[in-house]
Structures are given as structure tokens and as C-alpha cells.
Image 1 (cartoon, helix red, strand yellow):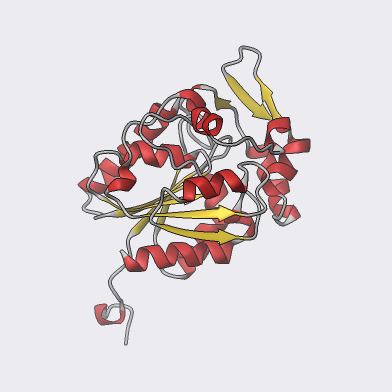
Image 2: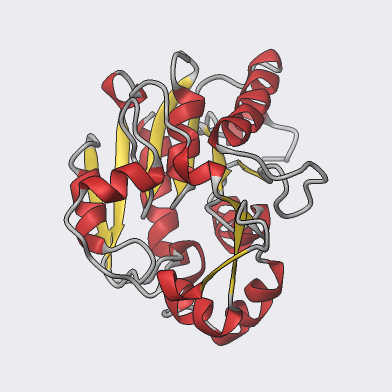
Length: 252
């Protein structure tokens, strides 16, 4: 059988679109994408405005969701079919907003992420839950104008990457970028999980989004998983995270 023989290929699983969390960029998904590639699962990672290689200014939740919506529209024009949207941390708010009112999303997956309901913001959601302190709060440094925050590398490493390989942490910290306050206070429109299947992945050693808060949001989703790892399973639990995504896309 040669590579030119189409009979050797199974139909491809759903395309995975990966949306990073606050302060990060598409770069954070590289190890996970390599593992998904090894399994024959196609993925695309988005740089939200002002993050990673994006030349655009940072904006709020609606700006970030518009960037994802633009990509989804482009994929639809190409005939890509339903996609699985995966959001990490703040990226969960982004995929919630981006998926509202669409019929081309096959699944929503939340990795230690904000599975917001209609009218909720990230900070509003946290304020509505029982208080649990996390290490991330001490790492956040407001910019001079108060419009954004940066992260202190000395404390961000433990908060975000406590279970990650040291070399991965060294590569990640210089890539972190400012995050707008608008992204934390703008509210989501719609609750697409009412019509779109969804999966929540709780990270039980998380020191950025408390696991107790994650478990509350996990109850809003159709399916739940739990990984014994930190806030960054795309670096600390690559194989287990890929297992969950593979299960999602092969069932779609």
C-alpha cells in the first residue's frame, strides 16, 4: 500500500482549535500539538490580540472572542466542518463567547477554565463562589495605568507551572505578556453549553484557579475529567490531556 492509496486513511477526526489563557499565547500549546499530531489529530492554536506573535493591541473578552470567531468563519468558508474548541483558564471565557449562536462547533472543552454562563464575567464568576486563595494573586502586577496586569516571574512559576519540567518553565516565563483588565470584567453573552456537548478538565493541584472553583464550573458541563496536575496540563500532563482530546474528537 502506497501513500497515494486513500484506502489506508481513516476519515480525519474533528479539527481542534486551541485557545490559550491569560498572559499566554499560542506557543503554550506546542507540546500538546506535537502529541496530537503523533495521533493524527489536526489542531490549530490561536494567538489572541496582543499575545504571542499577534501584532494587535490587547483588548477585552469580546475582542478576544472576535479573533476566534474570525478564525471559525475562515474555517467554515474552507469547509472544515464542526470543530472542537478547547480553552485553557481565561480561554474558557473566550470559547464560551465565541461559540454563542454558532452551529459549527461540535464540542467545547475547558481545561481548568472559566465555563461562564450568560451575563457572567471572569471576576464576577469568582466573586459568586466561595472564597479560596490561590498563589496566582501574589504574582499579578498592575501596569502603571491600571489597565492591565503582568506576572512576576519569580512567583508566577509556582502558581502556573508547579508540575511542569524545569526546562519548559524556563522557556515559558519570558513569553508571558500583559493581560487586560477588560478581559476579566466584560461579560459573556449566551450559554452555548445548553446546545453544544462540553467537557471540563479539573486540575487538582492547580494554584492559579482553585480546584474547588473548577469543580463548580465542571458541573455546568456534560462530561468531567480530573487530572492530578498543575494549572498547565498542556505542559505538565501532555499525554493525559491528549487522551481526553482524542476521546472528544473521535466521538464527535
